[in-house]
Image (cartoon, rainbow, N blue to C red; front, side):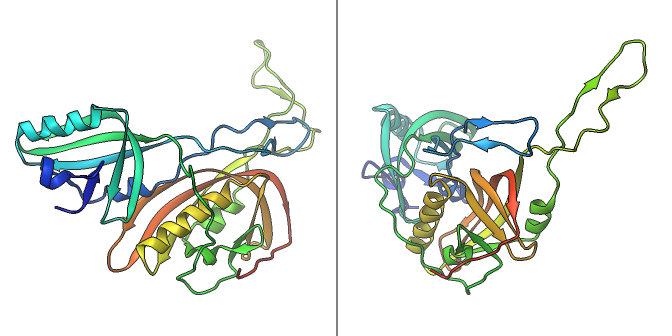
Length: 286
């Protein structure tokens, strides 16, 4: 398909016989993970105490499924383009996004040297580099079901799916207290009088993000990511449980992305709940 993917200004289809396979755009939209957070993990307390003074994003991998059909010479020219220097500008016109990407590897190839499909893996080395914050513009009805730091998540066009409340209310793993194992005695000897203490827990929350245009979808996606990694703990409030969960962003993956007709994406957000929570629930439209 012409006018779909441009690399350094070259039309991948017209110049190299390369087109993007369906389903690839989910990888383009996926979120970078947060780099490992340093935590104090006190045995005598629930959860952890993370250092979120200056959280930073990791690089992220982008997997592209490509079809080729212009002959082996054009495929070789395409590979030469990707390897002529490390980083290239990939403009996905159908998805409305340009990314600065670096080739990591070429994975499976099916077909002949002249006609077939292949998968390449690229790296976005500096997510949100040069980004200037733009407040989200909601394309869904206002809802106070969920908020983050006092801001309704419907303001990003987000609707959480079934299973969110169950994930939030699941008990964290219990810390193992003082126990002794003696080779000549069955089982273990455990300090049964000690209070039960819990670890932190990771919760996976499935959501849809909907928008009235592709540019609005990217605007809201970027604003959500930026707000997730602000310094300090996030306060994630759930109306159904009546509680606010102190947490921090860990990662998010996009499983579906549609840039035409009804514009939306489906993703899974992973938050680390540190263990502290209260019963206040608040949010605002703006």
